[in-house]
Length: 67
Image (cartoon, rainbow, N blue to C red; front, top):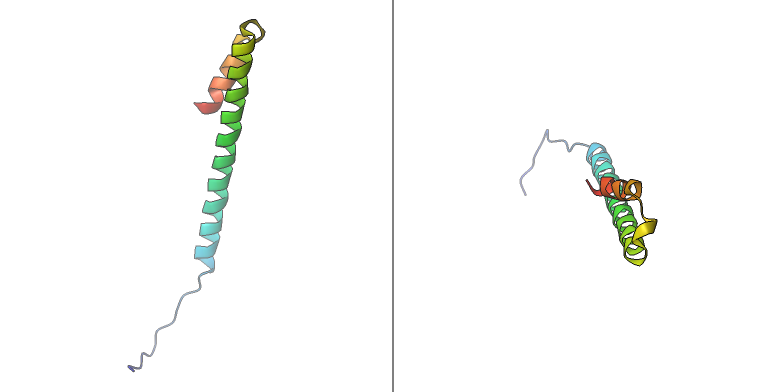
């Protein structure tokens, strides 16, 4: 086997922190997407059951979640 001298491996702590942050951000974005979809779904259900009960403010708030 060849002998390699003077080579030192770098610590993987920085990479682990970066990957952890990216995973947490990804999970947060996914949770927000589920919340926005659920809110839009329930709003559309309310709109189909009783169109008079849903105001313009509700529709605007529901649209602003996904835009």
